[in-house]
Length: 152
Image (cartoon, rainbow, N blue to C red; front, side, top):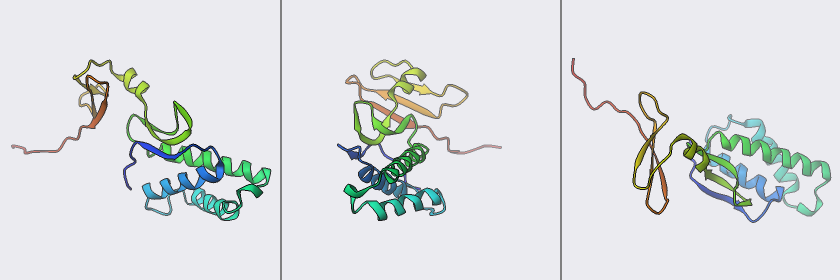
């Protein structure tokens, strides 16, 4: 599986015939195992093959079916969003779909000051740390624990 990165995959359109293939391509790029979401992928390909070439000739029921497939793809892609991020429409532009940071979730998890590194997921061991620059740029780091050495 390839790691999802923040950013847009489709912008300036809410048309099913544009969103569906963009979401499908993104899912295919993230998940190499063809058996994962097999039915969803198959339905998306079939819809694109039948209606993608003639977007002006899409019957109402097919348009509804396509919208439902897009919603299912969005749900699937959300499962592969990076930590503290989501897949969907950008909060500031509903026609810009991609992976976006959930700044509200970060703010709920930790109050921060510029240039201060904070531990998130309070517990015995943090799994993430967040750094906010004095310009408000946010960087999220995953903390992994690797054994350096042990002594018996």
